[in-house]
Image (cartoon, rainbow, N blue to C red):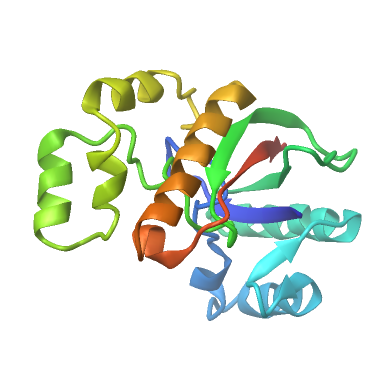
Length: 196
């Protein structure tokens, strides 16, 4: 699977599949709304809510980003593809490997799970803000922080082997526990690219 995300550049430290698309925020924008709706009509798979990658989708995404920037919205484009696929020839800059569930929206890297402090984890679990307690219970802090140290400036892994280890761990958790990661499994490694 290959896909495309148009996101608002707010100094995000994580740039992966779980970064929110900014387009829906501007559907009612006076100047941009119709162009965004046309983009969705042309490229969005309404069943999966993913934008599938094509040369047309990339070209129109670049045009849309230019229009967003003209309206003082700093938007950029990410491309992603499964690690065994080749990206389109348009791809500009490989920035790392993400780990995501089968829906492409859930990522332990995007959730910041490797970098959370003990207090943050305790608060989340005790307040029942997450069902992902097993992620932390089965991975001690020293190991977790070791993985966090391997994240690059984009909150992604630079090498596939490390990403594979986290994907295998998440899939193991999915087999052992009900509802971990919102009940979404099928974790995989994807390559992330920035489009200039």
